[in-house]
Length: 142
Image (cartoon, rainbow, N blue to C red; front, top):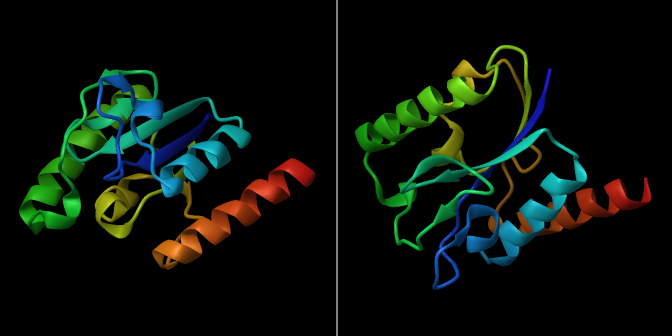
């Protein structure tokens, strides 16, 4: 059983092609990345509105796209592409997933993932940052 972290993309990005883990530079993504790394996962993947599921080390171009502006059929199509890739690199039935992503990025994935944790579920944006800070402090100081 592996530990997998999925982090949603964000609007604020570097202006040049970068590793996916470094491309996104908003406070929410930065804290999500820090928390994800403290979990010592086997893999961190990014849920990208444009690229689907991408490895944190994959070099990608900056883009402007979000699931929040997509129709339900478009989100379902995106989710199916992510699930196809996810099932080829993880074990959806046995791996443990920590998902740091909003409802649009996870709602059609969750029915196919057996073991998951949603540490930010139900929290508004400002409270997500507070929760991540709390989780990071707990991880660091035990």
